[in-house]
Amino acid sequence: MNTIEHFFHRFFKFIWNAIFVLTYPVLATFGIIFIGVTYFFSFISTLLARFSTSSPEMENKSEWKQLSPESELIEGKLYKQIIFGPECYQFRRKDGIPSVMDDFIFGKKVIVLEEGLLLEKWNTTEMAQIPDFDICLYQPEADKLVKLAHIKCFDWHLSDKRDDIVYLKWFDGTQGGEMEVALT
Image 1 (cartoon, rainbow, N blue to C red):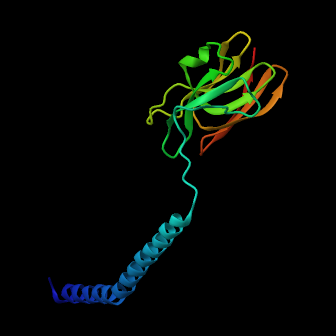
Image 2 (image 1 turned 45 degrees about the vertical axis):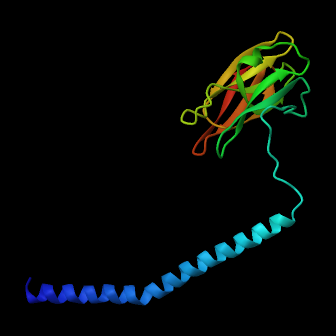
Image 3 (image 1 turned 180 degrees about the vertical axis):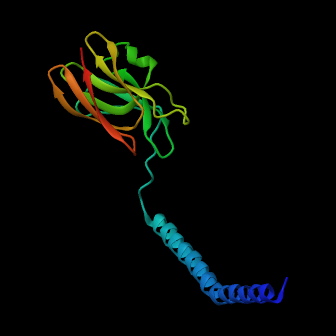
């Protein structure tokens, strides 16, 4: 190393060490304060939880419940809760008649139409492969489940219905679209 390179090496090493020595106490103090505030609020939370009379509501997997206030025909039982995601259910008819729905897993959305019930039939519950489901029309009189569309996102809704055509809007987080699906 020649003298100019040696000088710049020493100069930048001095600058780097000066910056580290001057900022270290600030960073260390911030870390200690942050940990202290976290412990303080954790302590307050546990203290308030002791005074609370309510208990966290846990959904029992073995309970059948009505999922849609509009439809009294079907009820669901929790099958699986996806971590940070939706729940999937087993469906059955409330009137006790065996149904084609007994063999499939469904999402919580139940939309009542004149032609039947619009359901979200899951094709898989494996974490790596979801969302993968079919929008189906359940016709209770014929006990028939008709596949209308295949969707690969959780965020969808019925935007419009005209005659025998429904319009489904979907959004997967980056892009969205609209589907026109015939009910017959």
